[in-house]
Length: 147
View 1 (cartoon, rainbow, N blue to C red):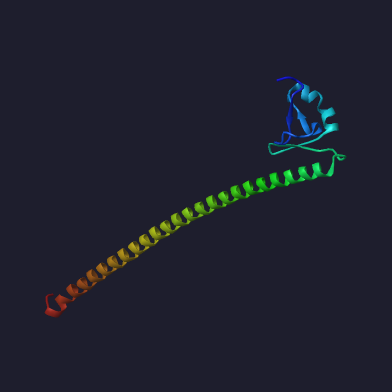
View 2 (view 1 turned 90 degrees about the vertical axis):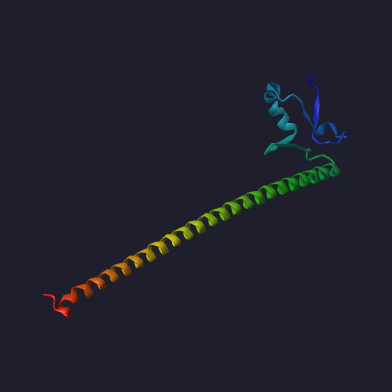
């Protein structure tokens, strides 16, 4: 690519020459960046590069730039909102899965508690039956006089 090539800052082919960014982002670009910054206001944020026209540019050019930036910002806000909605949906899904697991664990614990409680009652009833039978057997000799 020749060193005099330029990249248009917008998609328009009729962009004024002062509204273009020099090509060749190499060491030459870095070495001359102080000169470029003095001529153009180049902003880089989140991968987007845009060149603001000079203060003395015609109003219609400045308005076009403002409109383009507003459209770009609106698009970016839409993407960010969509990503945030997706993250919220993932968090809600994870919360629902966790809630389902917790409810299943609670149900399992409740079943164990019922099992232990009813098993204990059965054992106590069996023990009470044995005590009753033992009491009856221990009174038989006294009743029948089997000394």
